[in-house]
Image 1 (tube, rainbow, N blue to C red):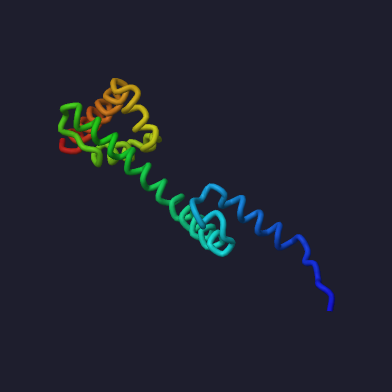
Image 2 (image 1 turned 90 degrees about the horizontal axis):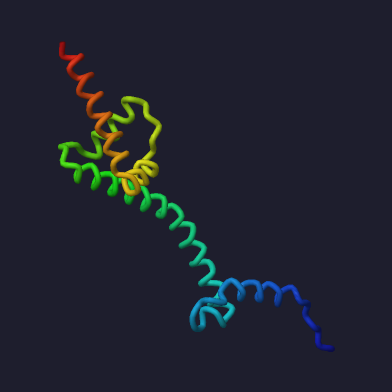
Length: 128
């Protein structure tokens, strides 16, 4: 029986996988089975960490806002600020607030002081 020469499709598939794993170290970039396993693992990690990145950035923004608020010397907290923002229906999300807090603290203090003052007036109106 004569020898059958296989087509190029399997080689093309392996080459494509190798290109994906070309920056991996050791056997992870040389052996086809190991490359396949590492590719699956890398894609799973990428999928998982896309969600983690959103969580991590939200935590960072909250930490920055809270640090600037507490550093102002006023007995005011992050949770009260966010509560008052929602109560007044101001459309400032945490990302924008954190950017304002880092780049322009005076503007952030003006925003928070305005919210505090309007909150105190409404509280007194509710008592009377």
